[in-house]
Length: 155
Length: 143
Image 1 (cartoon, helix red, strand yellow):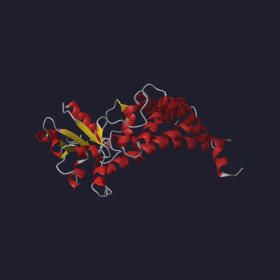
Image 2 (cartoon, each protein chain N blue to C red):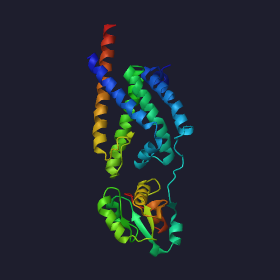
Image 3 (cartoon, chains in turn red, cyan):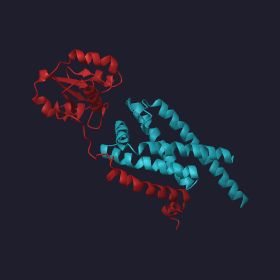
Image 4 (cartoon, helix red, strand yellow):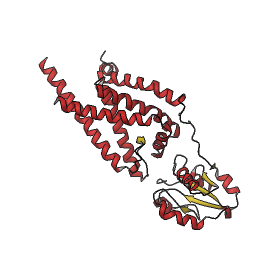
């Protein structure tokens, strides 16, 4: 009876916390699996494209957009990429427009698969009437891997 | 001292109940907010976006009405510590995250304001634990 688990189970607050968790689990399961506004378990990114597909395009018709923080862009980036992130949007968007031409495919990337900045920048570009906007699957890490380079710790 | 305890308990409970209730109708926005912290993979963010708002609502409600109040406060303390750690990690990594603490309605960006608020709420939770341990001690002494 003196086992630590038994002693813990006797603690009132722990039992209460377990009840609260179980109580929350029921509506949470409904939210996750049955609710009309439930979230997809696989992330859907509009216009997501693999590096292999981008490589198959005419390089002259591709404009790379780096959506990572400016410090990461300054450290290294895809050659000829334009830095455009949400923080400095108003300053950098005119620089993007200088490079952009109708008919060009804009490919936005951020650091890795888990980042969301590229999807956000791509959305904003679409709202700014830029067409043919794509998001690079796997981002900067995928590009590094494809180029035979290892991502550094800060990425 | 009773009115101080009641004031802190209800304020803390209300904050959590409102934060939870605001996020329940829009789990997509909350999942995206969690995802921006880059701490868990997307399915983890989906699971958290379904569970955390209900946990906040139920724990907050229990605290307001004084039901299972120690269990409720232990959840609230853990959640506050979790949010605090996530914000500190995001700030250290230089991520431009929005807290997502009150759903998309608050539209907060940056980590400073949520960090200050979280610290204040953690102090309030600590004060409640202290007040309860004091009253427990005095009850034990009297009996």
